[in-house]
Amino acid sequence: MAENCNHDCSSCGENCASRDPKSFLKQPHKLSKIRKTIAVVSGKGGVGKSMTSALLACAACKAGYNAAIMDADITGPSIPKMFGVHDRAMGSEAGILPVLSDRGTQIMSMNVLLNSEEEPVVWRGALISGTVLQFWTDVIWADVDYMFIDMPPGTGDVPLTIFQSIPLDGIVIVTTPQDLVGMIVKKAVNMADMMKVPILGIVENMSYITCPDCGRNISVFGDSKVDAIAMEHGITNVVKVPIDRSLTDAADSGRIEEFDHNYYEGFFAKIDERLKDKSDN
Image (cartoon, rainbow, N blue to C red; front, side, top):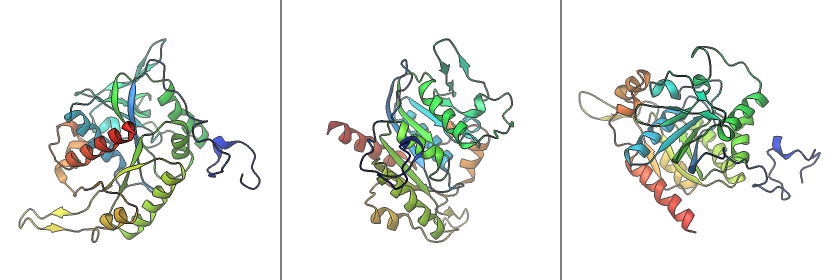
């Protein structure tokens, strides 16, 4: 037990021997059916967690699975815009219903609850964490094979709440090539180890750009670090995503589901295999 313990584990990140990791898990809505839940995380902002969450959901749909995204970045939601979703979420006496993208991805985000998409959310941490939990407990997620949780940056209140309260099957860590980000990734790795959540893979966004004239790959932000980081932490599932103007155009115009790519095909297959092996054991 930590020194000066106040016995309120819900707001504490200490890895005490007396803590039962499953004691704070919340049940989803009684009408929800969610088979696998994966958090997309990083130790800092601006590395492309939302883009990764969106592309993983698209890859899951392409593979024949029913996908959902919980946008846990309450103060900076961007998932609905990427999918061209502008409708507000509806509800019934039973609970809140997620909005659907054109191709059937279920989405819950703060932006589908606001009167205006440009309305700021100026809240303190406890209220933000409570809202994220409501996305899990009060939303009716229908027949979801894979739910991806787009996490806010860092290792603060909301990530801790999600790690403690939602039964995660694993996490995907997102990074970029800079040395600084590599250090931040290690924080995310250590948090996952502390909370006993398996790391399913690592994505390096903005890894390179392909010259349109000569076809050579140029490392704009320096040489890739992701292979060394993955090897250090025993992560075998790695993907490098380039800077791609057509990808950003698709996301900005709400057509992320129309973007044709093969960045995540092998990556997702390995996630699927890893989770099947985990469930078999």
